[in-house]
Length: 283
Image 1: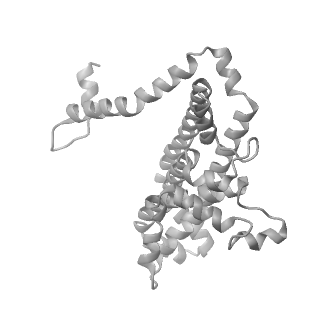
Image 2 (image 1 turned 120 degrees about the vertical axis):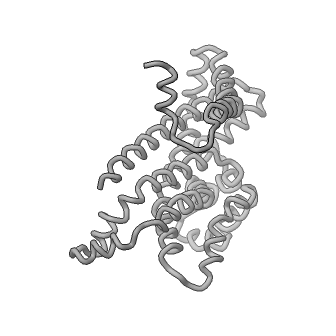
Image 3 (image 1 turned 45 degrees about the vertical axis):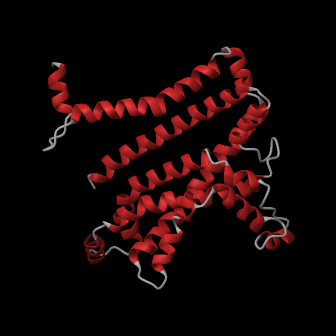
C-alpha cells in the first residue's frame, strides 16, 4: 500500500479542503509549544549523568514530596469524581431557585487566582478559622497538613469533573430510563446499568483533568500545606526551592520524574477511556 493510499484512508470525508495544511500546522504547533520544552527538560536533567540523576531522583526528600503531590492529587480527583457527578446531576436534572447562580459558582476556581484561593482556604481551615476551630477541639488539624493539601486540590479540581460530565449527562435519553423502569428495574438498577455506563468515558476524562491540574498545582497549596519537609512539602515547591539554591540539576531531575509519572498515569487513564468507549458503546 502506497503512502498516498494510506493518507486517503486516514482522512475523514469533508466538504472543506485543507487536511495537509491543518495537520502540518498542528504538528508544528505541538512540537514548538509542547515537545521541544519537554525534550529540553529531559535533556537537561539527564545531562548530569545517570548516576547523579538517580541519586537526586531517589533522595528521601524528593520521594516524600512526590508521594505527597501524587497521593493528594489521586485522593482529590477521586473525591471530585463522586461529588462532581452529583453536582452535575443536580444542575442537569432539577430546576430550582438559584440554579443559574450555582452553575456560575462552579467556574469560580477557573477565574480565581490560586494565591487568593490558598489564602482563603488557609484562613478558613486554620485552627482558629471558622471551620478549623470546630475540629481543633477534636484533635483534628486541617490546615498546614496533608489534609489541607487535599482540600485545596479538591477546590481547584471540582470544575473539571462537573464541566466534563454535565454536557454528556444533559444529552442522555431519558426514554431509556423510562424503558428500564417499565421492564421492572428499580432506581438503583437503572442508575448502575443505564446511566453510569454512558457516563464512564466522561467521568474518566474529568478524573484525568482534575488529577493533572492537582499534580501541578502550586499557588493554592503552599498557603495551606505548611510546607514542612518530609511531611507536607509538595514536589512543585521542592523544585522552586532547588532553583533558589541554584541546584538546577536537582530541580530538573524532580521535574523530569514528575513528567514521567504523570505521562504514565495519564496514558493508563486514556487507555481505560478507550476501553470504556468500546465496551459501553455496544451495550
